[in-house]
Length: 283
Image (cartoon, rainbow, N blue to C red; front, side, top):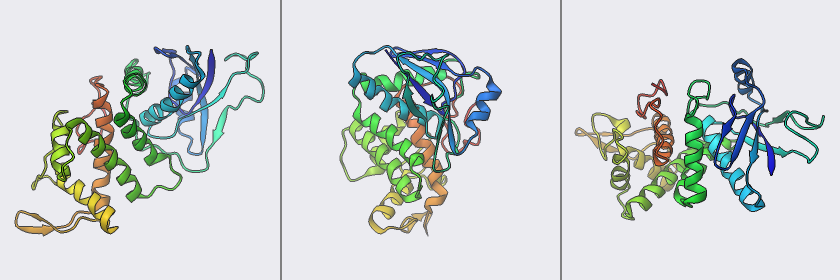
């Protein structure tokens, strides 16, 4: 049985999964909140005890769990050091690391799922569902979508063009696979896919640009083909307009994250599913 430390994940309750159990290092809400505010350190916040003996399967689970937990927090989470044979969670050697230093800022843009002290089972449900899709169902496109989302905030240098391309390529890839559509009309493919999840979005929406897929596709094309951070001129109500990446990036990033939840059939009744009006992430 493998027991390994978790650094930077907000958890205050013992949580059981099909693959093992997470044990928090502290149950005080104020203490965990203080630890999560650190921008250059990941604190030891829990241990994962895996109920799996196969070493390769353990490595796969830890690799994907790192991405899943990081996605939830929207900042890096790390699995650190396994316990030695004579160690236990309550009796660690003096040299067992209580934190990991990070060489870059790890500020989060906002958690995706509420903490367990606000919603007891929400995070557990998503973790189980996401890992099941990746490990059991071997859903490569879902795995790529999630890992690319995490790559956006895991790189020390965060370039908006690289970040946008990661988000767009992940979403486009899964949409084309799900719809079995390799046509050149990306907005049409994305619309067919996203409409199944009931998102308020259109192929072209002249009155509500943030809900217009042709703009997001146009921004991808401008970046990829011309290195431009704005679309080519697009006709809107008889007028030619250009749209800037900096004005639309946050909408698309939020949409990308919501799709990851939808794909896992996650619904805890607390998520604000509007990717444009999301000043409040939760209801």
